[in-house]
Image (cartoon, rainbow, N blue to C red; front, side, top):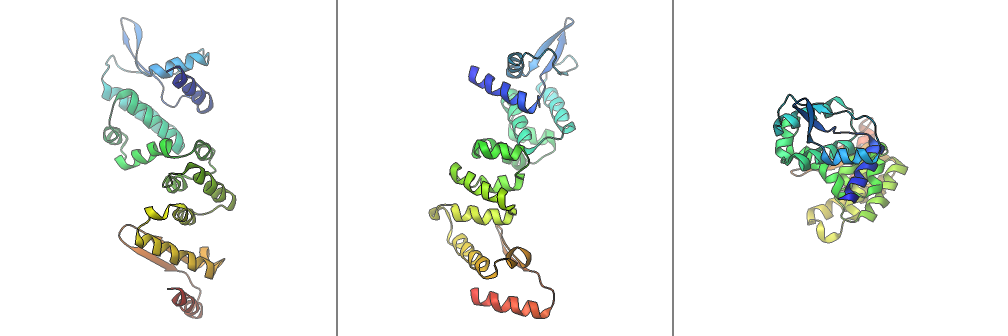
Length: 239
């Protein structure tokens, strides 16, 4: 427990207090309802003052959740900060992802995706996400990889080359163990690789392949009919 409090204290020192403790009043005294670990962490930081959420004399879990969600909505949080705030509310208030989603006006899957950031991504990548060097969309793609060292390797390439989410997805698919790819995914990845080799610099400007759950798309941009004919001719050789 002490290690958890120390880790929380470091997080609060770096990112601030994202979810203030909630208190209610009894006999003219404040009684802590939510945020016991947070209060202990703040004590370690030797803070003299602390912002809290004051409830109207009730200790109802739903009221606490409502107050915390309203507080979070007022802040411009990064995806990582939101993930930590969601996790804190779920753990300390013992609510489900669906209950939290309903209160936040979000989908359950959106809450789940944020929480997965904390479990699936390497700490270095989480730091880059917090610094804004990586988008939430890129992070979502990187979470597909189980190998966290491979995550870092690809993430560095994404940041250095300023790769799009689509290009990041291709790198991740290449890095995934072959055994985890379906035959359709293997074939799609090979076609995409062949097109990239053939078109090189034109790849990002003119050719866009999208692999969805129900359909695959090949989007081609062109200036005139002659360019279109040339693109079709070169694509036909690959496909």
